[in-house]
Length: 471
Image (cartoon, rainbow, N blue to C red; front, side, top):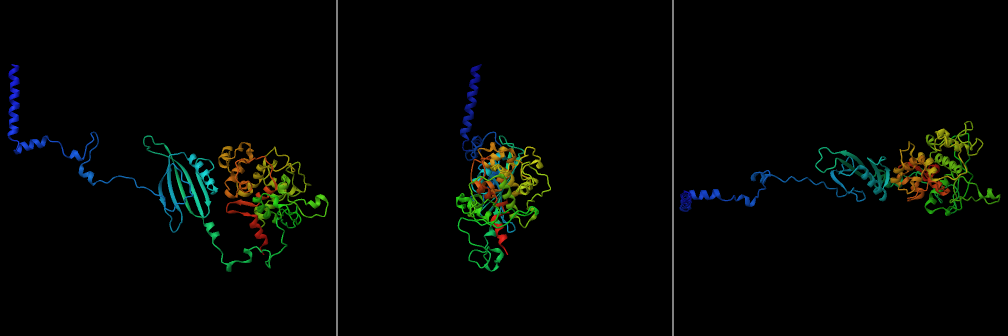
C-alpha cells in the first residue's frame, strides 16, 4: 500500500514540472515566476524588521529634522569667560535703541559651580566687579573692563519631562555686554574752547597758581584747627612739609601725597619733639598708626571729601554727652572725633550694643580688620551684606580667613564687592594672606583714606583737591 502512495506522489511532481517547463514562455509561466521572485526594492531600501516603515514616496518628500545651530556673534569679546559645560541657546543682537548684545546659555551643572567659576575667572582676568551673588547659588555678576560693561545672570531651573539619564535640574546663564557709556564719555575730549577755569587746577608757572612750590618728596598741609563747637569742622595741624615720603612704598606715595595736601594727616613735628629749631615734619610712613591717630584722620578725611555734602559728614561730639569709652574722657583732645565715631556706629561700643567694647585703647596699634570695620561703611553707606567665613574664603581666597574676627567678615566681604576701589586691593595689592591682626602703618592708613565710596559713585582725594582749588 505504501508503495502505491509514493508512486502517486512522484507521478504528480513529474506532471507539475512538465507543465511548468511547457509553459515557461507563456504568460502564465512568467506571472508565476514574477510572483515567486524576490522584491527588487529590497536591494536599494533594506528593511529593518520591527521598525515602523514609511512609504518610499513619503521618505523622498520628507526633510531631515536637524536642530538649528546657534552661533556666537563674530565680535563676541574674547575676554568674556564662557562656562565650558554650557550650550548656547539664543542670541539677541544689539539694536539702535539699545546697544546691548544678549546671549542665553543652558548647563546641567549646579548653579554654585557656575558662580564659583565666574567669580574666579572675572577676578583672574582683571574685571572690575561691582556686583556679585552673595549666596553662591544664583544671582548676578556686574563687571567692567576697559570700555566694556558685562552682566552675567545665573538662574537655577527645574527640568520637566526629563529624558532618561537627564538631570532633573539645570542652570540658565544670561550673558549681556555693551560698551561702557561712562568710560566712553570720559574718553571724549572736551574742546579747549569749552574748558573753564573751574575745570583745571592751576599749576606752577600759571598766573593763577597760589602757593610755594614744594620740594620733591615733600607735602604741605593747610593750617586748620579743631573746633569742638562746630560739628562739621576738620582736624588739621599747622602748615607742614613731609620730607620722608620717599621712604613709603612706591605704590602708596601718590595716595599719601594727595591725602596730605587735603591737610588731614596730623603729626607731631620733630621740632616739637626735640625742642629744636627744626620745623620739618617727618611723616614716618612705615610706623604703626595708633587707634587714636587713625580716628582723627578718618573723621578729617571723610569730612574733607564731602565738604559740600553735610549729610555725609561725621558729626563731632559735644562735651555734653556721656563718654562711650571709659578711657576717653571729655577732656581728651580727641574726644570729639572718637566719641563721634562711636555715636555713628563706626567704632563698636556700648552705644552699638557691644558690651565688650568698654575701652577704646587709644594708644594701641590699629589692626587691618579694625581698619576695614570702620572704613567700609563709609564707602557703601548702606547695610553690609550677610557674610560667612566660607564666603570670605571663596571670594578673597585668604588662607588665614579663619583668623578674622567674625564681626569683621561683613566689612571684608563688602570690600571685595567694591572691585578695584577695594581698600584691601588699593593698600595691599594682590595677597592670599590678610593677616587680620597685623598693625596698620601710617602709609597704609593714608592710602585707605584716599577714596570714599563705591566704583563710579565715590570721591578721591584728587577730586577733593580740585574742589578746594576751584575759584
